[in-house]
Length: 495
Image (cartoon, rainbow, N blue to C red; front, side):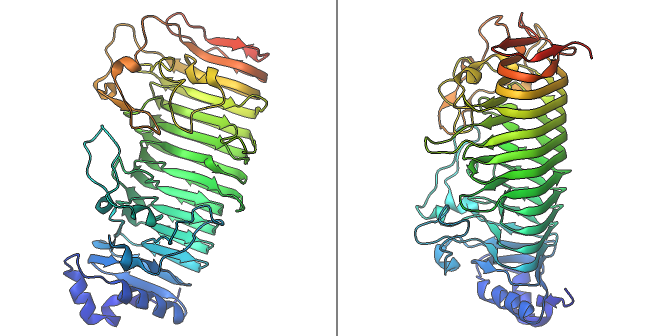
């Protein structure tokens, strides 16, 4: 990019007005003209100086770097009519088609060499679409039937050569940053800050992309923090690295798949991240036929201190989500160097007739300030991402629960159980909890253990091959280090 377009020079009078913006003036036309002019000139920078730039949907063009200087805010208008013409579809086929179209604050479709940079902020104005709620009691309700017309606040679709650097994004009413079927993407040192109860407020969603690196991101949001997905008829998702990130979320911090797992995902690294307040730290889900393979998760510290039922440090699940869903595969996954605090269980499951294959779980140290009893309500609720085809695993009392797997190696696993007679730390005491996918409120009696119930270190059903090193493992309240059913898993105390 050999040209730098500065709004100071091209729009002198407008710049003065923008610097003292009252958050009422709509700047869509002026900003779009600047983007178009820079691209037509061969590429360069559109620089927004300090102030609030209220805007409808902006479309990026080839060769343009949109740079928000520190103190500059690009803010989405809350009026749908300010974003016309709407996009009829943005994704693979009709999967996300919204009747009448949808909009984004910033969208790039089929662009080459585009960038979003600077120390400024993009504001999705999501709070304009919801009524306020009391923290810890419920999810917000939309004020307007048109709220779903706003898709991801920032969408890059079918682009090559994307750079997103140092900006802050947030206050959305849907996904925050969506990278769809793009190649050669660098996301570095960005911040994403959303209201903790904003539904569908994913931080970064990567669908069908290849050669993507996300480094140094700080994400604080209510839904998934970083999530890889694939769509029906779309591309596979391959060669993705997420590293050195600090993540807080009420949902999954680092995730592959779930209901959008129609095509394959492979060659993925999650490393050197800190996760806090997360319902699930690592989630790997093939629910619609995807083959998920060659995945490395390493050096992650965490806690699952969140007011939600059934937290899981690790959740790996292979099954069909719907009766017509294909059953894919999850194989060649390594989870190494995981340490933190939780009151929940790790689940690694496949539906009957399917098998997880070739998993390595090593150097995992889990401290439990308390233990949430899954036997009380695990069979009846938990949402679409809760091992729904393996009812035994949903209620099994153990720190690690495995069902239907082969070639699993678990070594150097330690569970530090709650100390007898020691009160639960204040941070882990909740008056109420919600379950994923429901507005039902639970009370402490709904998750407390009833007396000295045995809890196992590892419980396995139909697990074959590989081995489990039990040297650092123990059960709790009379539970065993390893409880096996219908398995020929090799237990070793020494090599």
